[in-house]
Image 1 (cartoon, helix red, strand yellow):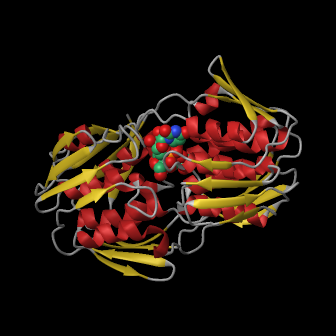
Image 2 (cartoon, rainbow, N blue to C red):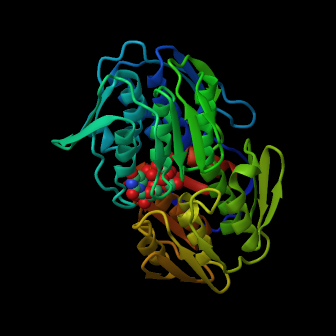
Amino acid sequence: MDKLVIEGGKTLTGKVMVAGAKNAALPLMAACLITDETLKISNVPHLSDITTMANLLVHMGVDLSIESLKEDENFQSGRVLCLTAKNISEHRAPYDIVRRMRASVIVLGPLLARFGEAEISLPGGCAIGARPIDYHLMAFEKMGAKIDLEEGYVKAKVEGGRLKGADITFPTVSVGATENVLIAATLAKGKTILRNAACEPEVGDLANMLNSMGAKITGIGTHTLEIEGVEKLHGTEYRVIADRIEAGTYLAAAGATGGDIEVVGISPDIMSSTLEVFEKMGMKIERKENSIRAISTTPLLAIKVSTQPHPGFPTDMQAQISTLMCIAEGTSIMEENIFENRFMHVPELQRLGANIVVDGNFLSITGIKNFKAAEVMATDLRASVCLILAALRAEGTTGINRVYHLDRGYERIEEKLSALGATIYRTKD
Ligand code: EPU
């Protein structure tokens, strides 16, 4: 297994190009199943989760080709995926793929809407929590699907073959359920209203792409989406939005190392809550139309942060900000409200010397002067990257084991960090 070795204590400076958002690209790819015409998606990041989704779609009969773009002077790579779901032979997402990536459940909506039936392996729990899919299923039942659970699989069928519009209120905000039902509702008979819907930028990206395919969705960017069902959607060309979590992670690296980093290719508007947190911690943030620069010249300050659905502070930045809190002056509080088990990075940060007390879904973090290098273990995607941030700051050389999690969500991270001045390399465990 791969391991990252990081020599701490370097100040990171420079520009880094932000990749396309993994969490936007995955539902966009799944949406190819809603039409028999070709979908051309650009700015797709090169990540293992994207490969898993591509494998699932190909397994179902999707015709997939990849055009790789040459890197430009800004480090921009990204790939263009051409997806055509003309000859779908398989309406089942097998356990072997779903267990590797929960986001696979997003194929349920488009399959059900277009073919009137679908089978998806139940994903089971994961490192950050139970993560059930009951909201997805509740919504599809309201839209006329009959759902059975057999041998670990969700078997869904629509009487008469076509879903019908419904008025659906989600009990709490769910990104995945909103996206799954949104895709399905585009082809349903009549109008669907999704209340308490997620309004994350990635949901807006999906809605915009579906509209460019002929869907009729209004309320984009709000907690109420209205979808007027149409008979058929057509192909389109669409560019994935920038990854606000990747951008936030590199800006956090400026905070961790007392550096000066500009992330290029992203609008500051889609990550306001994260930028406000950096500012409250004493970092200087410069917002431009298509880039954000973070400068950290003074010691970080303790603050209180709570994760919330968008436009609140995102859970996917919780581990990274918790790491900054470890070296901030005073005692900070981090409250995690989205997932029940997203503190797996805490024992690893403690191995690096952090002073953290866990109390339910709260962390009380008292700042130390610096981390001290040690061997640590990555447990999930964001936990892995927060250990990189700590290692960049730490005295000595840190080894981070099990970094395959990182390859799910951070494109060429060693290369990008090296270009900013980090000493980091990959080796075998
Ligand atoms: N929930 C339910 N029932 C459901 C659906 C969700 O109880 O049917 C609960 C979940 O257990 C969780 C909360 O609702 O406690 C929110 O979950 P949500 O459905 O919003 O999460 P998700 O769609 O599974 C996406 C991202 C996550 C991100 C969350 C929250 C993708 C592929 N994943 O997950 O990203 O943390 O939204 O913003 O879009 C990551 O990138 O590291 C990551 C985990």
